[in-house]
Image (tube, one colour):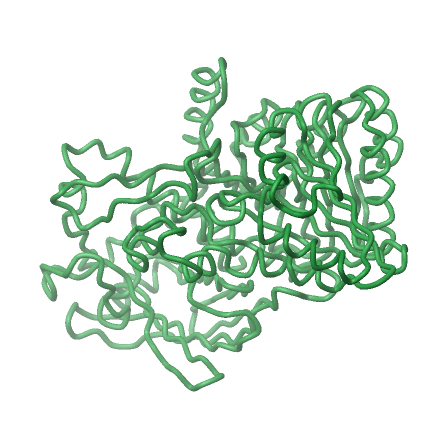
Length: 553
């Protein structure tokens, strides 16, 4: 849900996902200077119980509080946000909130209200009906996890840690499976299929009379899958996929009531402990008979377990690349392996054509097609969230390319990094995985948002990395969703949640201090309107573009 408002020169936009509300606003530099606006305060009113609180930040005015306690938030009413963008990560799905945005003017310690805008939003339900979108909390290397659970591994903490990390993702899959009853069918295809909870859910479904077959990767993930299945009680319901051209990398279920395909569960989540609770992952349900029927046909192709070429011919014929200029609401599918790279070119062309905003995740480096899409000095704001800058023997070259394009004012890239421990700083040591076996530590999602705040947002999500191998070699599936602003709002909020988190981490890693304690000296607010002259009104700068985009201008 989106809400806009303006009053006395202050313009604002609130975008509500399920667990995130993103706020952006704008006020002229002339007004800031003439009225001596030193920042903005945000008050949140939760309608369900009447709770009212001012959102907090970590920066203070030195003249008011020179030695703030480390890591303790300070009210934005006394220490306002000197920015034009903020987000509330403490909301819940399906709740109504009113945000009061207040320009605060005067002198530190005696600020007064200037322009005020109120925005009321209702957060999106996780399950919207046709679509349901799940995100785990992602990346166990988290300060909040460390605080809540004393940084003990989840298997030591117990169920509370798993529940917190999952944030409804694994529970959503269990619910998806539980709807199947006698004479219904479940067909699955997974790269990692090791979760005891999902094995138990399928065993329970079998006792209800559900017909079940799950394909699993029997190449690179063979040992882990078969070790887990040996004690699962459902090994006889599972079949190895042995002849994929690269990886049998899918993660989907098709639910077919009385044999008629109706719903699909898909996304980036491997059914392993790290996949569900450790990496940043998402899952997506589509309730559409046509889409489900295509997935069911795709599953039949995979079940034949042929080699790459005949599989690619069949999957390309089943899922031609989506139309370029589709209008209205639609959900298309793209299956891999494919006979060519036209689908990858299609994604890159959509990325390159973004008018105002592009947001993408890259788990294993950035294909040259997307480097080209990001390598444009224009008015489109382009964000990329990466696990790492490159992969394999070309890492050095790829990393140089990333460092080059991120210097463009309209291209902002965040790369996963770990907050280290020393005895002098306030930060806690972090575990970086749910188990010792992890190829990915942080960003495992695969999605692209093109102009998500526009009238016709484009969302591409699924199991495939935006790469050549994921297009012409691996077993993969992707959804191409158009005309669903509520779905786009959820994905955008989650993207910015993770992007902001990892941009902060990377900034710490780049400080290169002798100790991280040195990096955490107090960071004070400006005590004059000079705060607004740090790029926010420099035409074409990253801060300028963010101010305009997230305020809805």
